[in-house]
Image (cartoon, rainbow, N blue to C red; front, side):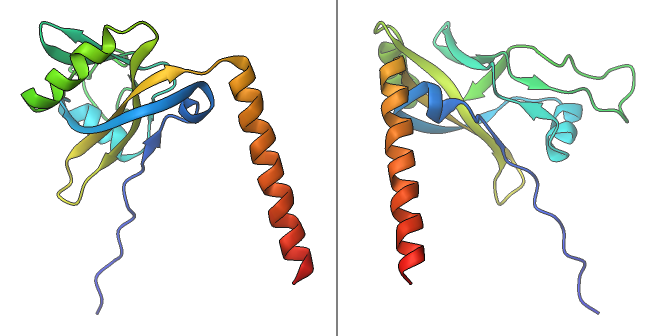
Length: 156
């Protein structure tokens, strides 16, 4: 008999990241969670849409990261929106901290996933906000690329 195939845990992505921001640099980090938060993440009940990162006392924290309460939890269930500490090497924090002091740059979570060992990891990005004309230019380029692909498919 073969082993039952397990479904891969979901990957939670920040869908608005590419549209709103220009990504300058990415970092992978761990995140401190309680048990019911991990269980909620395993079933895909989280949102990164309003999340952002802050540096407090030379530590990086993520705020606005919504993880729904675990339905099978008890009285000691977690709060859906709370400040969560990110686990980074000191050298990475030293790289990130001065960049966030530059006007216009911010720290935004890009995605949350489970690695091969089953640990929760978060990819964070140092980003610069796009202007409306930049967004329009991106849409024009995307439409042009789509039209070229369509034309190539019709030629075959």
